[in-house]
View (spheres, rainbow, N blue to C red):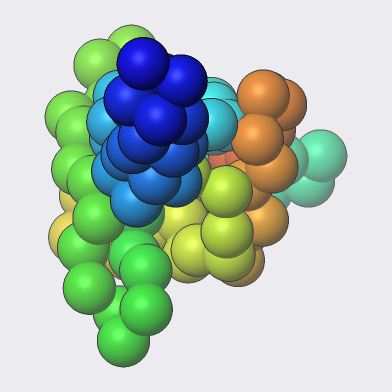
Length: 115
């Protein structure tokens, strides 16, 4: 009887180690921000602009895409380094970001020099 209990205990440990965690329970970080157009004659102004926001991963593969309504976007991503990009009014902008588990990163995409 003791031998069966030991075998069952060992099997449970092996299953726990060998089975990868469910992707939905893996740690994530959130990236939120705005698409902004800035510029014009001095003193210049910034305006919020609807568009498409997306996240690029390794080899510039698109990891997530979102229509930015009211210029706002939000992504839930695994920790790592990414490129945050946006397209609006025929323009494209981007910036590097680093996502950390259980943290919120506020990162805007700003198009500057708009006249």
